Amino acid sequence: MRRAAYPLLLATACVTAGTPAVPGGLVVRTSVISRDSVLLALEVAPGTRINARLLPALEGARDTLRFAGTVDALGDYFAAAPTLRTAKAALLPRAQVVAGICDEGASVCHVVRAPIDLTP
Image (cartoon, rainbow, N blue to C red; front, side):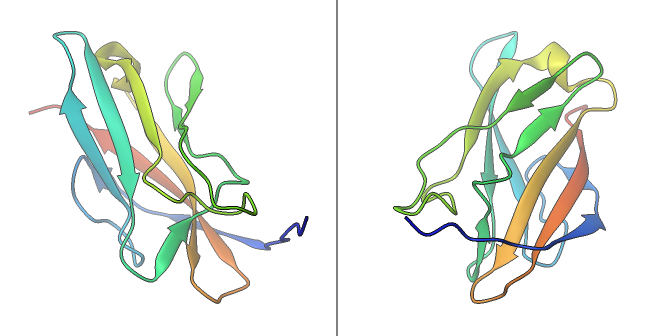
C-alpha cells in the first residue's frame, strides 16, 4: 500500500456557509435536518481534492468534531464530499472548519482554517 507524504502549507480563509472562499473553492454546504441539528458537507472546485489523511474537522468552542466519508482506494483523498451531522449549537460562536485542500498533481496540500457563520 502506497502512503503519500504531503508537505502542508498553511492558508487562512473565511467561509460563509455555502460560499466559495479560497482558490480551490472550498464550499461548506449546509442542510437543516431538524430544529436543532444540521448536516455539513465539504466540496471543492474541479481539479482539487480534500485530503483524507488530515481529516477535516469542525472546531467549536467546546470540542472538535471530525467529518467522515468515502475515501479513494489508497486512502489519500475523499472520493465524495465528507459530511458531518451536528447540533446547531456546536457552530456558534467562533466555529471553524479545518481541511486539507490539494491541487491534483501537486505535491503540496494547503491547510485551510475557515470560520463558519450560519447566522442569518
